[in-house]
Amino acid sequence: MITHVLALDPSGNFHEGKGTTGWVLMQLPNKLVARGCIYAADYKTAEEYWNKHIELLDYNFKRHKKNLIVVIEDYILYQNRATNQINSQIETCRLIGLLQWFCWSHRQAYILENAATVKTRWSDRVLLEKGIVTITNRKYVHQRSGLEMNEHSRDALRHALHFISCKNKKKQPVQKRRIKYFSNYKRRTAYD
Image (cartoon, rainbow, N blue to C red):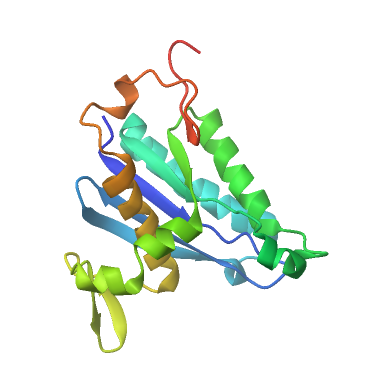
């Protein structure tokens, strides 16, 4: 049964500006256990930076076993931003592919979520109005845990909340469902 959600808002940018990946770990139904960021500027190579993401996943896979689902912000190239990506290495897509492959290869449940949908549904205004975060000394703070949340960890929080509120509605445990072909949900079963 799914008891934890690890949500990531990945930025693979290393050579094209130093990116920051925000992440949160939540225990169902809605307890924020941990949050953090992985900063590309802290690493000498893109591969070292990306490996830190793998270490985060691996640690949580071992700790929570099959009671974890990983929620990853997807990368979609929208028409109005396509010209900005001309000659880009699109490093974030590479990182997302690596994360997706790592989850798949470890038979770990994961889902990709659209950034635009999540950021619209769970804007800062909504997080404040619902009492999920507050502003203290000009910083966003998670109400229940008291943890400060920068922009990147708040984006990861949005993905976790969206999964918990909108995609985890069924009461039956995820791993007992036999889902083979469900768009955007990848989990190997004993029947594969």
